[in-house]
Image (tube, rainbow, N blue to C red):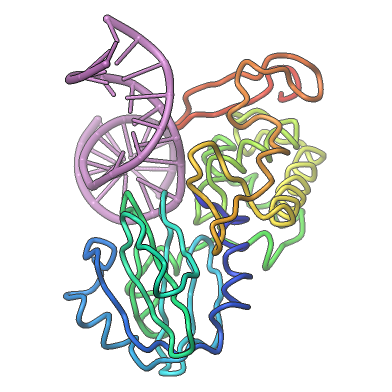
Length: 278
DNA sequence: ACGCCCGCCTGTAAGC
DNA sequence: TGCTTACAGGCGGGCG
């Protein structure tokens, strides 16, 4: 369940670990993860011999720049992991793609549920091939906006706050965990219509977005009980220790001691404090 | 056009 | 204990 803080943590590690490395060979094991390609051969051919010159994040997508001019794009979906390994390391179940570098070492893409994907494209074709990338909203960590502009975006919408926060076209990078944490930090209920917020509430919400995400990046993301997210080296994040509401239903609110509630909203689980969030 | 629901997929855990 | 069922949720697509 990687969201912005987890993907950004991985991006920073990739920056150190794979930039400057040349891809010697590629093993394409899971064809479902390469579904944008007609055949895995095409994917392999475009990668072998290429050197990685940089790694960027666009919302929840990781974009590897190659010295061939192509881009290697990766979305982790629900259960995807990227792992830095050595060739001799045993291969984990559901390993979908293995990149072996000319200098020692590998990068492996492991994805049990195969909701994630990898593909190679060009900068020109990127937004045609992946329209959702062209429609991505602003990135609250990379390109923050002013809270007044944020407010202008809110007043136009009658959508409930949580639905808006997780909409990648509105703002890029939020999923279920951080939208709940942000709404708690802002003292706002998930089902408040966006256009019902006062100026003070708008400011508080925007500040909560930025502060919560920065904090979560600082603690290297959230690793839940299922270990669905770990970093490039298999290490868990620490931000789950700081969660105020997510997966804390029945437990006392850290602020007011009222039991945290669990609700079903837009087909997802939502956690909130009925006392602190209005 | 927008809000909502489903399917995709596997691992885990609760329930009978 | 062992089988069945629900749930986890990012995202696109389809429906009302």
